Every structure is written in structure tokens, then in C-alpha cells.
Image (tube, rainbow, N blue to C red; front, side, top):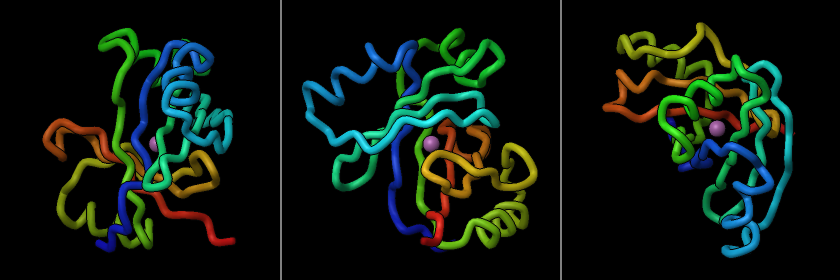
Length: 136
Ligand code: CO
């Protein structure tokens, strides 16, 4: 599988205004966009470190995976996202290696990336997202 690097780290917050102040005001990271991803039940707020991004995640509704995560564990690191060259080839490889993915196919995530999540059971406890950058 061709991994191109760490794309972002996803962090679950209760509230984007309050949850972004450290990243935005203290660290002074560049804000690159806020987006609602209805299919994943989240609002994302993205900050660029220059080498990998911070993706803040707020629940869109009570059924959101982020709402469930916050209920169970509170705010904090939610997932690690690696950029891949070819998401379809990556999914095929994961299936061949009996790695448990969430859903059958990629979906469109923040910034138009094609994304798939790998279950923490298959990674040693970390929710891992793979993402292919949209072609311009
Ligand atoms: Co993500």
C-alpha cells in the first residue's frame, strides 16, 4: 500500500468555538475550512500545521459517531488519518489481509477526500482513516 504521510489527526470536541481556541489562538495554526459532512454526522474544522493537519470534530446530531465517542470517552484524540495514493487499491489490500474496515467502500470526507476507516480492533487500538486527495 502506498502511504504518502500523515494527513491529519482527528480530535473530538464538544463545541468547535470553545474546542478550537487552543489550536487557533494559542498555537496560531492556519484555519483552512469548516465543513458539515452529513453522511458522517460531523462538522469538521481544519487547521494546518504545515506538515499534517488538525481536524476538530463536532457531532452534528445525537446519532453521530462523535456524539457516541464523546459520551463514552469525552473529548480528545479520535483518529489518525494517513494519506494514500490509491484508496481503491488500499481497500482491496485491506480486504485481502482480513483487516476490518468500517463500511464496504470509501465515502467522501472533508475537503473532498475519498476516505475509509479501519476498525481499532485491526490496528492495535487506534481508529485509522485512509484518505485519497481529490484530483484537481
Ligand atoms: Co479525519
